[in-house]
Amino acid sequence: MKIGLVLEGGALRGLFTAGALDFLMDEHVTFDYIAGVSAGAGNMMNFLSGQRGRTKQIISPGKKDSYYGPAQLIKTGSFLNLEKMVFEFSYKTFPYDFKAHHETKVEHEVVVVNCDTAQAEYIDGSGDDRHTLTAVKASCSVPLLSIPVEMDGHDYMDGSLVDSIPYKRAFEKGCDKVVIIMTKTGNETPTDYNKYKFLIKAAYGKRYPKFADALLNRADVYQTQKTEMERLTAEGKIMVIRPKMPCISKFETRESKREEFYQHGYQRMQEEYKALRVFMEEAEC
Picture (cartoon, rainbow, N blue to C red):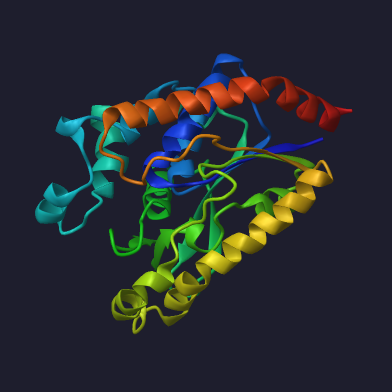
């Protein structure tokens, strides 16, 4: 039996996932397949390399190493300096263990969206280091806050815009059961880009018309996924772990709130650990 892990994005809300995965690393829990989208892609990479605490360092690095905000907008022309977060951090500031990553036997993919087709693509993370990091950069590229990332001759952005919770992909890859770590409570919804329709059309309507339309449909697609997940949970095919406390904002500035949300992720996984073991062991029967 094949067990998959799906990691939702959510910018700094990825601290919840970081805490949950750090607990799993403490317990030496592994999976056969992992799909990471947006902040979930970064979480996935550090889980695969076994670098406990690294995601927390990156998502909440402190003022000196900040990679987002007005200062970055002035310096780079983008609110999110993903080149710094993905490449500079990986090679200099918080070195990534590429050797451990290459040694993993876990099948894993980074979820991105092709700006021309508005279709999700799933990038194999076991290839060239820079190509994999470029996929992570693209998966974290948030509309209006950062620019599309060129890869293999195409422009890509945040995969969560069309496949926020890629559990279907996990089943397509042969998983019998899937564990999903979400960064929102059951009542919270993703960004509804209809609120920014004028900006979306102005920024992407001419060059990427399909992508612009997909952004405006994003909230409906997410709700459809949530409804199907309820059915799959009842059928015992997926297990969802999510926050119980109010979520922090995507770019929370208060260090105490960020730390609290990380600790909540660790505690939530600790609370669900026995149920998780049962869920995974049933898949092995």
